[in-house]
Image (cartoon, rainbow, N blue to C red; front, top):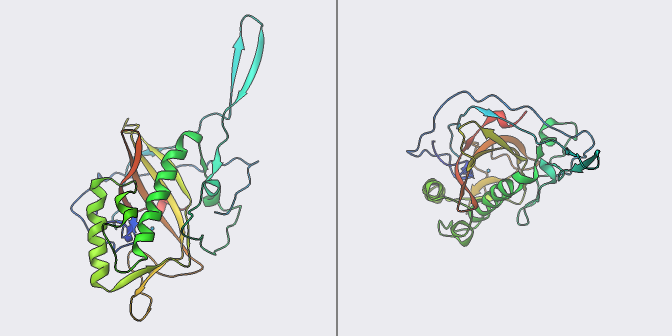
Length: 263
């Protein structure tokens, strides 16, 4: 994988999307990744709701558990239907408590607002959201601190912390801080890969990003780089995060821009 996310990438990182989109020495296998089909429950309403510059590519597929299961009882010769926990739309997942949502209106007919998150995927998506928030909050405070409590205590692996810290150093050299007042709307969903490892999962996110880097002294908005730096109302930006499960805890391990995350 190449540099952290934007703001790093997701921050300067996958999250890291926010820092600089600078490059790291890590590389990812490059195979074509077809966009997964959109899954939406027509009866579910959508609640309104930051990497490296090289995409992480894998062969992927999505699976959706049945909405209910039917069990037969030989003794009673009756059939009982048990409803599985409901799937939620991407926008129904918990929102950030520290960063507002971008003001761009959400069209309920937009497929980017209709993808669903299964109950077993919620811990993965929530860890992703916490990682994004930790990065963005860190990038919004001057001086930028690579050892901020949010990063140190956040769901990050050692692998991704190196590009995040490099992104912070790069933005510091540019005298830039992230303005998060415009907000960001996260619309993450799990994309299963076929490597047979249940502890390594891909999360795609068609974000609506209204944050932007600015000069600390003048407040002048930075020009577009890996990310739009457009500010409100926000611009749709596709990213991918590699989430790994270590000792029962999901953490961000890699991140990159991924246009296919947006339908």
